[in-house]
Amino acid sequence: MTTKKQLLKVENAGIRFGGLKAVSDVNLELKQGELVGLIGPNGAGKTTFFNLLTGVYVPTEGSISLDGEKLNGQAPYKITKKGISRTFQNIRLFSELSVLDNVKVAYHSLAKHSMLSSIFRLPSHFSGEKEMEEKAIEFLKIFNLEKSMHEKAKNLPYGQQRRLEIARALAANPKLLLLDEPAAGMNPQETEELMNLIALIRERFSLTILLIEHDMLLVMGVCERIYVLDHGQLIADGTPEQIRNNPKVIEAYLGEEVS
Ligand SMILES: Nc1ncnc2c1ncn2[C@@H]1O[C@H](COP(=O)(O)OP(=O)(O)OP(=O)(O)O)[C@@H](O)[C@H]1O
Image (cartoon, rainbow, N blue to C red; front, side, top):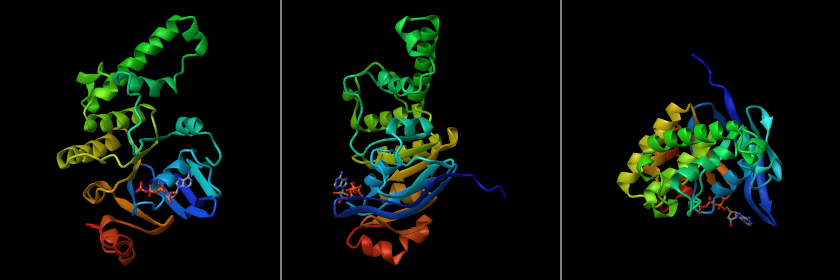
C-alpha cells in the first residue's frame, strides 16, 4: 500500500477579532489527492478558516504549511502562486469581462512571459497569449462553457457562473482547491451535475480539494472525510458515516438535517 504525501498541515491555528475567537486551535491535515468536506452551522468560522488558508487573514495563533512550507503571513497572491486557489461564497467574477477573459485573468497572474515582452509586443508575448487562450478554452470545454466564451460573465445563468468560478480557480493551476459553498443557490439537478464535475476534476488534475458546503447530500456524497467546525472549534472529523452518527455533530446541528 502506498501512503499519500501530506499536502496541507494546519496546527493549532486560529484568529481573534477583538474579543471574538472566530477560529480557535484548529488542527487539520490534507493528503495529496483527498477530497475533504468542512461543515458547520452558520457562523461556525468556515469562511474565516478559508481566509486564513489563503492569506486574507493572518492567523493570530498556530501555523499553516503547504508542502512543508509555512504560509503564515504571506500575501494572498503569493499563496495562490504556491498552489492554493479558491472560489467564494458570493460569486466574484469580473462581470463585465467575457467568460474567456475571466479564465485568462487567472493565467495572467502566473504568466511566464515578461512584462517587457508584453509592453514591446515581442513574439514571445503573442505566443504566450495564444497558449493562454488555448488553455483557457480547454478549461471552458471541461466545464461545458465554451459555447458562451464570448458572452459577458454577468449574462450567464447562475449555475454556469458558479461553474465559471471553479474553472477560473483551476486555471491558476492549484495543488489545493478550496470551494466555498459551490452548490449554493443551485437546483437539485445542477447540484448533482456539480458533484460529478468536482469528482471529475479531482481525478483529471490530481487535485486536493477542501469543500465548504451546506448541502449535506453533496458533502456526504463526494467527500472521503469531513471536518466539523462549531463556534470556531473543530468538534469532529471522520468519514461521512462517522460524522452522520456523531452525537456532538447532531447536537451542533440540532433542529437541522444532517443526513
Ligand atoms: N473581519 C471580521 N471581523 C469581525 N468578525 C468577523 C470577521 N470575519 C468573520 N467574523 C466573525 O467570525 C465568525 C465566523 O464567521 P464565518 O463567516 O467564518 O462563518 P461561516 O461558518 O462561514 O458561516 P456561514 O455558514 O454563515 O457562511 C462570525 O461570528 C463572524 O461574524
